[in-house]
Image (cartoon, rainbow, N blue to C red):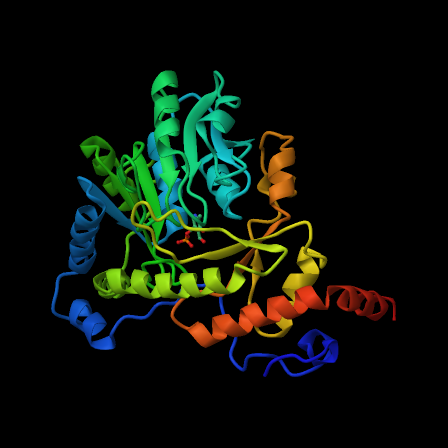
Length: 391
Ligand SMILES: Cc1ncc(COP(=O)(O)O)c(C=O)c1O
């Protein structure tokens, strides 16, 4: 039901807008029979579905090799171990990123060296990374942001100039293409996740793409737990997960079309709403249209935390975008202190809104109508919220 006055907000005790929560996770599901057909219970040799999935993904990303993993986290960690320059310790990486990225680096025994992001892409770029490169740099870690891609070509050039290994976290860019080609083909390796919240849902899982035969061989060996070096862990992708991911891969083009329809609904609906700016997908090349991210501008009068609380009370599971920035978090492991004012400012401005197949066009209309209501009634809400807090 729509809101007529401020008393109708769930945050003030009224009934929520939605019966079922509206998530910012993808949670895409394949046809069940297709999943079963790939899973072939009891019929195929262990590991054969995962192998088939790797072949399909290498074709999909237009790369020579694909190595599957049990999760994106372990795919990242093992790839870092395989690529880092021996004898050096620092990984140059953004701070405005996935909340566990510094944990991954710490697990490998390396040190996170956080760099600024570009104001427009919200991502690491050659310019922002350059300032952090030194004699102890072991690896450059580019991370694609939640909407669009980071500067793959610039970072590639920087890595070549300094003769450094370069890997990408491409978890949010599975379907993207940039001027130089498909994501998956850049740097020494690119890493992806198959978590249910991501574009290809394999329940859980991850994979790495690379053009290098020697790196692929090393990743396979470490992933299978061969050897005694750090990174040699059994981190194989289970066949049931691979079957789920294969079934979702079959549906990917159709899913992207559904994502596009939802994104366009948001874009049209938010166009005239003051105080909120939707991050637009750059559709000069193929893109996933999956994540819906808005910036709360200076004329949005509610604080971001209050906005998110109010939306959550309505069962709109909006989330803040990469906050707190990693370099501002207390850390129990060695890292390099950083002063990153732009990252800190940007980490306070963005919000993710519901997306994925469980969100209908009517749900989107209702979310937009609620945001518009909040904008119109902002002054009264702030006043009521202050007295709620005091008493
Ligand atoms: C950017 C990014 N990198 C890595 C990961 C880790 O992937 P996984 O959940 O498969 O371990 C995530 C998960 O949310 C992510 O968002």
